[in-house]
Amino acid sequence: NSINENLSLQSEYDGEKRIDFSNSKPKDKDDLDQFKDLQNLFCSEFFPLPETSFRKVELNFNNFVKKGEKPLINQGSMFVIPLNDIVSNGIISGKSWEYTETLQMLAIMSRAASNGVNTPYFLDIGSNVGWFSTVMAALGYNVIAFDAMKSNALLFRSTLCENPKMMEKVTFINKG
Image (cartoon, rainbow, N blue to C red; front, side, top):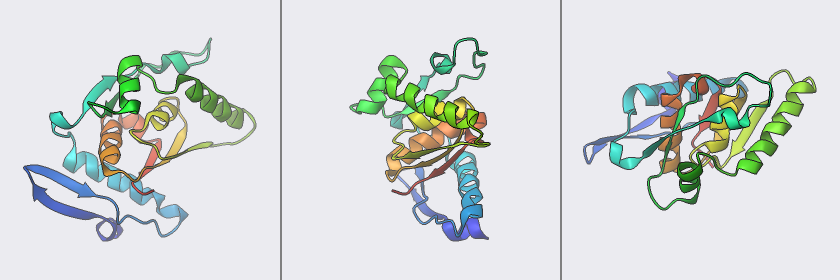
C-alpha cells in the first residue's frame, strides 16, 4: 500500500526506535492524507520519545483568544529541545515564542476567515518545533507544516501525538 511505499523504517539501534519520513512524497493534492496516516503511524509505533531527548512544556493559548471569546479548554503541551535552542528556550521561559508575530499571524488568519475563505490554511514553512502551527491548530485553523530537520520533526510529531485535537488540524511534512 502507499504508506509502506513512502515510509522507510530504520532498524532499531541504541535501544531506540527511529523513523525516517524523508521518502514520503504525495502523488497529488488528495494524497496529503498519506501524511496524516504517517503521523498516526508515528504516534502508535514511536511515541513517547525517550525522556532524555525532550522537555515537555504545558501551554496556555488563552493569551491568543480575542477578548469576549470563550477561553480554550484544551490548552495542550509541547515538546521542545531541552538545552541551548533559542526557540525552545523562548517557549520554556515565557510559554510563548515571538508573541507579537504570533498575534499578527492570527490577525491575518482571522481576516481570511471573516472575508469568506471557508477553510483558511496556515502554511508553516520551516516549522521548527511547531510553535506557530501548534497555536493555529489550537485555535481551530487547518495547518500544513514543513520542516527538514529530523530532530524538529520528532518533537513536533510528538507534540501532535500528545494533542489529538490539534493533530486533526495539522498535516506535517518532514521535507525542506
